[in-house]
Length: 145
Image (cartoon, rainbow, N blue to C red; front, top):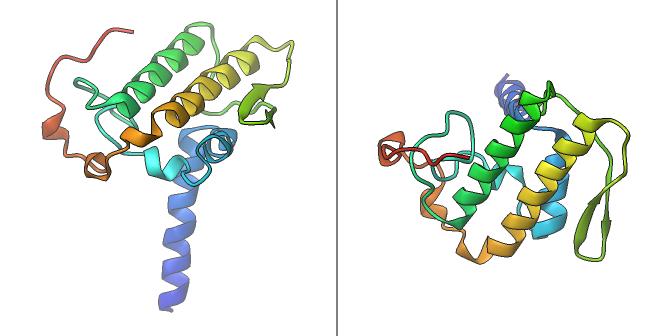
């Protein structure tokens, strides 16, 4: 019985991550950072995860704030970034979005590509102490997009 419960919890957690961002975003992050995935950046700082608020705590958190702003812009164009799928490929150490005629697909892919590249660029600043940071540490005014 216990293995079944544990399997169910693992499945539920995995589904929660997929529901919150396109599954391709996780793959982009893994390709860009080599060892890290979306789980490493979910609930990191004040802006990586749901309910973002306050000032970003570091450059990784700023990557997430920019990603949120990018998704907000896509939503203003009528896109649903959290449910949209797109195609991309890796070329050397760069992620490239497959050209698409669909504006939403293009916008969301580019949002995720920029965030994955940002994580790659600033990975050396990743601070495990900012993972699951209490909300009380995120009280300052949230920066504008």
